[in-house]
Length: 277
Image (cartoon, rainbow, N blue to C red; front, side, top):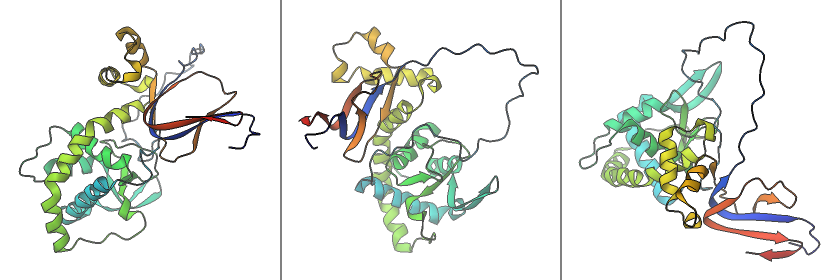
């Protein structure tokens, strides 16, 4: 950066950080409503319900996760091709997509000799691994993976028409299935933790908070803090991923109401033309 720069920047060369966030402002008292509030809707959630953080962990899927997506897509097209089809919701059309609940149903019944999935939550976490790296996507790129009536699409189906796999593809996918399931099961816990940390703190469950706290116990940057302080932190931490080098995290003069823990990667700090790493 040129020596004439008159601002401070922190540029990320990282794809994983934890950030603390300030507590929400006190809620303002509201006058009593003139009429009772309506009952909650019994309809399924919208497939385009907003997601609080749509950042991918990486800009391109790793070779292993890309291959895992290919194996699952190949077998799904062979065993249940009707799950990938054009859909309509609230007058909008979505091409070549799947429903989250049906994806979980299918993954739970996939035959694998030495691999057994324990729950729907585990199966959903395995799909989240693929979504986090872009092997699958929410149709409007707004959601993490949820075991709900939400629409998702394989990366290969974003632009090209869906084609049924050849018999050679099917045999190859069946041969690789066990290794793919074991890989996804291994990656699921970290993917689920990142998914929880992307939620706003007020939406986290008690189980979510317990999982975050257990993870904080293993972060070296927090090892000098007492357990009581760590319990305070787990309610205000969020996960950010910055797959593109050079992303500016904050500028000099920004309000200092949060701090970062770098889990992987590095950050360059630029102050008045001086660079410190």
